[in-house]
Image 1 (tube, helix red, strand yellow):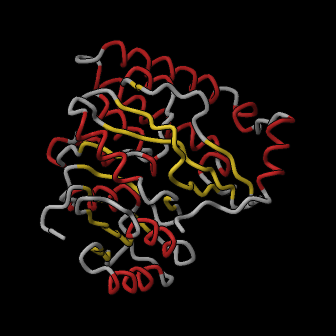
Image 2 (cartoon, rainbow, N blue to C red; image 1 turned 45 degrees about the vertical axis):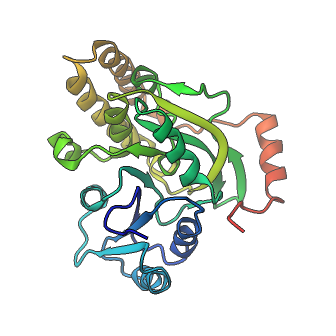
Image 3 (tube, helix red, strand yellow; image 1 turned 180 degrees about the vertical axis):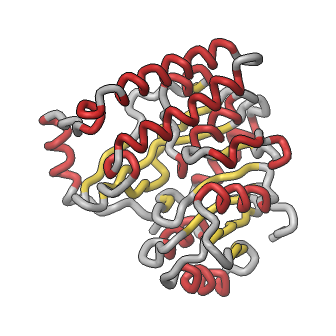
Length: 292
């Protein structure tokens, strides 16, 4: 394998995920791809055995795995951006340390689409949502159109981070404000879609682990403020070059401000439908998908 210039770089940021990172790494190194790829594990000074688990996998797959071990905690954004700067691939995929992929053909399928469509900036797919607290499953992106534009994304973020493969933007071409925002995944999706439309693949090829203590369910008001911040940055960024997208971001930002003006409603959980509850109950008896 040519580790100097892999076709795809996979970024895996990690912090205190010793219980899950082994499965995450396993799902990457077992990819069946007709090209070279690398896995960059960026550990943000974990205080558990996350780094040790990653090193054990690196001993088994030294031609694939590179480890960035932060001597001190730098935070989610800086850890990700540092790993992005280290990526050598033409394409970049994401798999965080508590998620995993469940298809061995994910990288091959996504890279093949980008190879065949040079005007395409990213490709993403359905994922299994795994609600760790209730041990239930659901599928993302029902009725998702196959093509996505920047204007579509400005209306709603439909791209799950671990499902995306980007046609990589060099770090030097990223805006300076990218290091100042918390929800940088939405910004990255947007910056790439400004360079060309994206493609949706309907196959579920990853498992996204969700927790009740997550940002949206654990502190919805803080999550709304972070969502507003990134949209305000995108409004300004695209105001001169993509006026329609900027207007769509502005509409979404105003809707968020409305929710912030009524914090009781913003914090109220959405009650699932009866059908959704039935599906959730049935899903408890299904195994979490993984590469066999």
